[in-house]
Image (cartoon, rainbow, N blue to C red; front, side, top):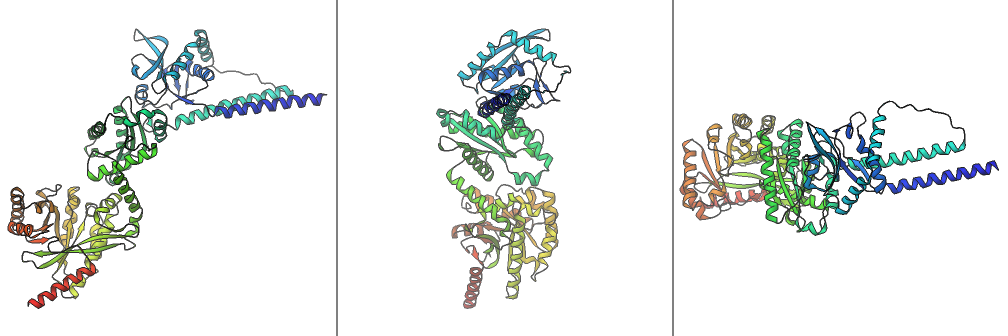
Length: 635
């Protein structure tokens, strides 16, 4: 009989524990509401740094409110850098807890519940609990009513319990020797497990939405906003901004601490600039997403341009070099109606990359832009080994003197990519500069030029000169002189037949480093030419600062040389160069009229399709042989 009774009690306990575990599973599906707490309103609500949680009257009331409403009410992680006003403006919380009147925007609240009044600085201030616009009107009303329904006596009782619990509590422990007591302990453990699991899951949900470094949302918060806070009727006016940086460029220019300061200051500005109906999140290192509502495409562009201008000014206030670190890409949900959150952000990122390429504050994403970006991503993945694999080929474009005689050539690269086919430099040079691999290509082309010059010398064409390009990144490399010297010394040719063309950005960025490198190259016997003079980056002082042998006038000036003002500019540039003992080459000459114009202006050398296309190696040799045959016939 006794055994039967014990079996019944045990079975009952097992069933009760099973039921509780089922409840625990159901609890995991409960919706979480986020609370922005007041860390300094003891004993109503304050943050206990030792226990790392909020304590006081309100946390206890929220426990009871959670039991009544079926929602998990969870505090956002505490951050000394984030205020309730900021979390209200950024719509990061559903409930703003224990805020004094006037400290947050009441317009952001659907409902406010007056909690109490306190005396502060000789005046009474009302303390509210607010339910924000992130909640539906129905839910905000239900929660406010439930909080108001908690009687004043109950609130006072909770406060008294909390105050009395601050001292050490003593518990009398006795061994349980009956089966009933054992069952009670099992049930208590199950209940504690349920409560702990619920709290842990709720805390994890809250922590998963906040970037602790900057006190703003993270990528999870962005996804949550896009999936739950954007009503379908409003998608036509919603735009996703990606505010990003050119990370490879920042890594070359700044150290880790400086980069983190840039990102932190940027997050600070964006948080302050974020509007009421906008959602801000950090979605990657140096990358932020802003979801906003704009009445038109033009309004979205104005918002993005103003944001970047303001951000530039803010960063420049800390250090002038920080300006220009960010650009913005824009994805319109009305133009991309099937875009989910991740696709919209991806599209906006392509717009941001395009803005950097075109040096504009912002750019909308387009299908063509996305296709181009996807191609660039494929190229980025393969270019690091492309030089080693010999996928780059030297092409030559010949140069003539004033009499039309071939006197030299420029060596340019083409990438024979296995997947994409033959690519021109415009497809990969900027990409390699940002990735930091351009120096290897420049040195590879230098070696190709040395090989060609040695071949020409052995064939009796030793007077022909050959130029190759060096970028800013290569010129700024401290080891570049030693590496150039090592390559050049392996080949037999007259040194002044090798011409180094410095692209404009190769000396405009760091004049001191450029000067040291240019002087070192000149000391080796190589000739130095400034490329693309007149394109916009260089200044005339560069002609006197550096030991320059020649300049190449940009094709944008050459092709308009028939215009009176442009012709006057061209003639002035050539005359100034000649007065300084510098010879001039005009590139981009494509017809007889342009050729006659640049000759009349006084240029020394001409380069362009009118005389020679850009030729692969074998065709370049055939071109020279045909010229030699013609000269023999005429001779």
